[in-house]
Image (cartoon, rainbow, N blue to C red; front, side, top):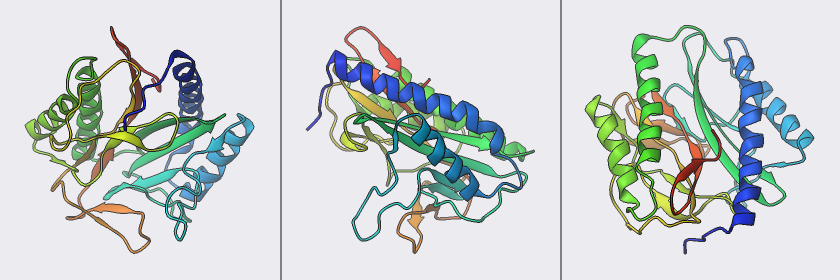
Length: 250
């Protein structure tokens, strides 16, 4: 069931989203060669706590194997849900960061992919196009239009550059929980409800240099490209109003 948010709820989600975007702005200089990803996780955890929030991803998931950290950090062929560790970021890495903040029960969600040091031209282009896919999807998210218009915009832009579009994972409703209905796919399949004022969704293209197929590692979290080629991931939380669409995590 799609949960439409009222003005008070959207205002509270917006506050959480602004906090998350502020965190990213402060975090960006830290994402560089030589830094261990667990250092980034610790910094993020402390920042969120000082801001009066809770890391929305920490402990999320199945009881037997909840996500163990405050931010997902996925490098190169890792698409999403990478677990921070003692691994050091290397020059030329594509580092995807995905994080959410629970601020007084209101959830924000945003992902960016950072180019660490000097990346290859093909890595840079993939990252640029993936970000363009995100904004193409947002442009297609209008009240009265159908949900799959977002997927058509994302997929169309990615395919025009010869990239693979991840289809096993997708965006989602967000705001009162980490994951809500509807599923916001990046390829046009599944339910196709009309977009309506009060919907808050996370649009998150995951675009691969090669195939769009992915696999899950033995930790049951880390998703990697099936052909081990590079991936990029960008995400915004947006709110749909009857007469406009707002990027809450801009």
